Image 1: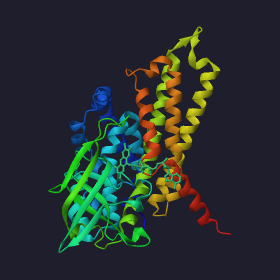
Image 2: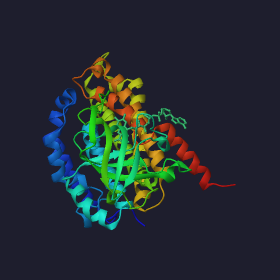
Image 3: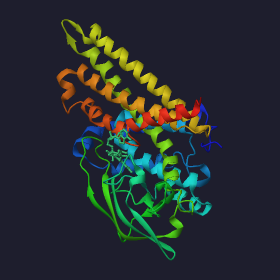
Image 4: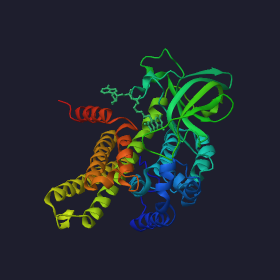
Length: 389
Ligand SMILES: Cc1cc2nc3c(=O)[nH]c(=O)nc-3n(C[C@H](O)[C@H](O)[C@H](O)COP(=O)(O)OP(=O)(O)OC[C@H]3O[C@@H](n4cnc5c(N)ncnc54)[C@H](O)[C@@H]3O)c2cc1C
């Protein structure tokens, strides 16, 4: 089965969407990014504009009111936005992973109830997996949901949750059976909407990824109706979350491409303006070697990302492809942002230029949606599984 509701999206449709986003970024976003970034200010106005552009429904099927875009087009959108301000992409990316969990694993009623509201952005949120004592090892989560009549009662804490303050609904991974062996058979995923017993305990201050809220969420005797259990059966929570993460990793790879591209673009421009020893620095071989490496790295990252998106759109298992793209593109973002900073010399260290932001934003791509250590293990496991002796 294809993952893409409309993998027939034509090149013209894709070009139209990308053009509309480019115009919006140029007109409304780019001139103000530095101000919002340094004030760590939430972009309320741009969220409304993103609703109008349909971004909160980008990958949700048209039958539920979304744009129904294939992952390939989605990756290009994310890359373009991350080239301007990576934080903005986080506002709709983890929201769309929550939507993907419902669309892939939800009951027909859940899809009808929730997806149209997610698609318009009327209800916005994200994915709540990580806990203070468990990130990579998700089977070690402690949060507990106990059945009580036609409700479940949830107790525990989630941390690092993107959109945790301004979002209202989260795909929440919990344990419904703490004695299950293996542990994932006792894990379930709920749609948890804020209400009594569900509170934000704190905003987490960060190195980069400014503007967007990362928060700790606390659940104390939080009662959630049983019909919010995604898929309607217990024990499928890890599968639900990991299914959503394939798209999540493609989006992180695309964000890495956006950052690597922005770092290169700024370096190419600056190196033609800045002169030392009587000529633009781009004419010095040492700078050319850097630019050549940066451009090649970016191109390789893009090809891996688009290839992973194509595999996703064909409905194939693509954890290996998504893992490779996420790993390579995020490392490319880190390397390109540091090289761009070096090319900018002292100005690269200044807050008056964008390059110091790429340098602060890029490492997150190596951590989020599964660390790069984990990605390499996933790649190796799949490599072995696909090549048995
Ligand atoms: C800005 C930001 C936003 C985030 N947004 C979200 C969100 O919206 N929702 C959400 O659920 N989470 C979110 N996270 C959490 C993120 O997914 C986790 O931080 C990440 O999965 C790593 O988990 P951890 O921090 O617990 O590290 P740990 O799991 O404790 O890992 C620590 C180190 O050990 C390594 N490691 C762990 N296990 C192994 C192993 N078996 N072999 C080798 N190395 C290993 C890791 O690679 C890492 O280097 C966010 C994090 C950040 C920083």
